[in-house]
Image 1 (spheres, rainbow over the protein chains, first blue to last red):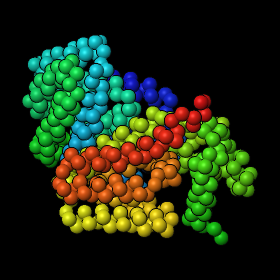
Image 2 (image 1 turned 45 degrees about the vertical axis):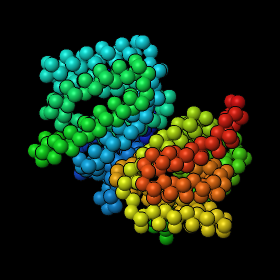
Image 3 (image 1 turned 135 degrees about the vertical axis):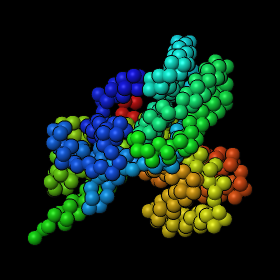
Image 4 (image 1 turned 180 degrees about the vertical axis):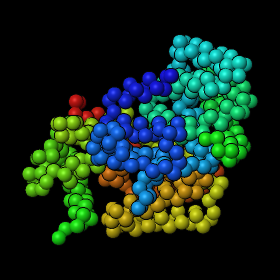
Length: 230
Length: 226
């Protein structure tokens, strides 16, 4: 997966607190650490064989990102998340990603455009085959191709961070395949807009696509959470 | 007898003192980018132990002033032109978006509060009360972030500003208050007019005020290599 390789290559030069934050964040995203669960600095220090100072710093980073809450007399716990929270992260992602995509118009190489086309074909194929778990990875890879070209590294990393939050509930979409059909079509339009060097259209498509997914989440999320499938 | 909390709080003030002295020295360019500072050196100068110094270094690292190199101490960070551009571009997008959304949600009462913050900024500026001015200035921007209908945006912007806190200290010492007030007045007028495009545009201009000031100051001859 492209995201992972990119992250690993960054990770090598990362300060220790960042590495610890990545480790804990991933555990929260995949649900190994559940909302409301306590995170003990001492236990982490023990498990990772490191001192508590970088752990404390990592936890502060995760707090500012919204993944954990530090509660007086109770310690650090994994943040609960509501549909409303995720919806808001989607809105921010739509705004940032639309801007980033418009910014790379005219910068994509022939090779990158071809990659987009190939991934788009793969998307269509897995939708047909009903392989929706696989779809989410291809969909991510598609977005990474053009996002990786943005010259603003901070913008890139903030979009990734919004994505981390959204991943806490991404499996919900597996139950609603019509959204995948929709996304694949939108991606075809997006490729055309990239090829036409139409920055305004690119921005519009990316924004609308993400907001549409967000609306879907709003519509279906509640029953998903109630059934306790997370 | 010292109990634990008094030890911690005395450390805290000591740490803050060191942070302030070092921060000021870096802003006034008494210590230049690329220059090294060691814990030992600071410990000897202040006649204190190394623990609060280590904490001060970490805080200054998180504010962007220092880069800590394991086993070597800390180096004053370069100011990269790209960082300045990236930060203000991103701040402009997020705050611009918030201003556009706030247009639909702000009540007349909210708008009057914005105007009051502007009056406060002017009053604090007259008294040369920098911390009061910063507070009123932040309150102005926070109210817009809080009324935009997306609670996460404030968290994201706050986190971003915290990572580039160094810029804020420089801008505060370089920008003229009249410029800030002129732009804030335009933002208020845009919001009151109900024009989302205008609100977004005026907020972006305001976010880019720091960009212009910093680029003028640091674009050519500031980093250690150049």
